[in-house]
Each structure stands twice: as structure tokens, then as C-alpha cells.
Length: 279
Image (cartoon, rainbow, N blue to C red; front, top):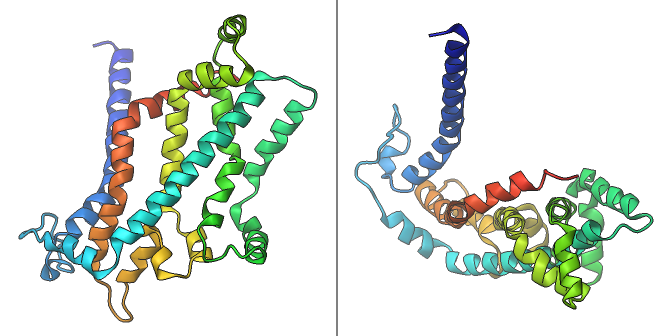
């Protein structure tokens, strides 16, 4: 075999081994969480660790549902995730459509300022926002946890704007000839063609809201208003932790995100690939 083909084959094998090693690195914590949720107490801290539970104890899932109001926490999380998704998709698509379609004086400056806000970490605005929401009486309500989604997100606007700019102007010219208004162009041409980008934003926002811990911790004190991410703390007692029940609840929490990505991964990868084609 020629030297260059041998070198190419070795590089491909090394690349594949690196990919598999990386995949294994991320799968191990998930596997450990799932297996811990079905282990007996005697199997938890044995050495060497029990990689395959024997026997399998599924009743920890039922105990987790009885120990804390997981159904209530789940409903709160679904409510917050739904409002955040709706707000993000409505506001970000409208702003991205405007930046992609209209070149007016100063539009590039405003877009640059918008991108600059991504460099401002949330922790900088955390205290001013808390003071503002406190003054209007929104603490211990869900409003601080979803209202900001209706004012757009710089990263999602950038992502959608990049995708919108890949759609040919000829389609919009044809729509105008057919009598479409600007909102019709947005609703009937832009949104249906932007399905991969919209699904990408949906997955990002779903995962962010579903797993969000810091803002609920700041604004929510009532037990009945906790989302799942905050409710997992209920498995921590003063001097002990119900590890199997905690892992069972964590598995139930992670499952919707995994399923969402599993069913939409084709659109997700397509959306990520296409958003960088045109500047």
C-alpha cells in the first residue's frame, strides 16, 4: 500500500478512535445515572463499582414520585418551557427577519450592538433585574422566568438572521407580485423555509429552560411553584441523600431533552450547518 494511503488510513482510524472516546466520555455519566437509579443500597458504594445492577430495582421511580411532588414540578417546567419557546420563536424570528431583509441606514450598527450584548454575562444584570422585578411585585411569580423571552435573544437572532439571508430574494419578489404583504412574506415564505433553523432554536431554548436552575432559585420560594431543576434539591435531607430516588428523578428530567434531540437531530444538524453559509 502506498505511503500516503497508509498515512490517510491511520489518520482516519485515529480520528474515529477519538470520536468514540469522546462519545464514551459523555455517555458514562448518563449510564451511571440510569444504573444508579435501579441499584440496591448495598450496590451503591461497593468497590469495584457494580457496572451492571443485579437485581434491578425499579421501585425507586415510584418512590421518587411519592417523595416529592414531581408531577407538579413537571407541570411548572412544561408551563415555563412552553412560554419561553413561544416568546423566543415569535420575537427572534421577527427581529431576524427585519435584519435579514431590510438594509436601512444604521442597521449594521444596531446589529453589531445586538451582538455585543452576547458578551454581557447574565450575572452582571442579575441584581438590577431582581431589584426591578421586586419593585413591580413579580418575585414568587413565574413572570420573571418567561417575560424576557418575548424581548428576543441575541444569539438566536444571529442564528436565524444568518439562515434567512440564504433564502433567495427572487422568492420574495414573486410573493410581492402575487400581492403578499411584508407580514405574508414572513409568515408564508420565510417561516416554512426556515424549519431547520427554527428547530435548532427550539432545541437550544427547550434545553436551556428545562435545565435552568439559577433564575428559579432567585425568584421562586414557594414549594408548589418549583420547576424540576429546583425540585431535585428536595431529595437532599439534612444528613443523607436518597441517591437512587435522586437519580431516578434526574433520569425522568433528562428524558424529554434526549427524546427531543433524538427525533429532531436531522433538522438540528442541518440548521447548524446552513446558518453559517452566508454572512
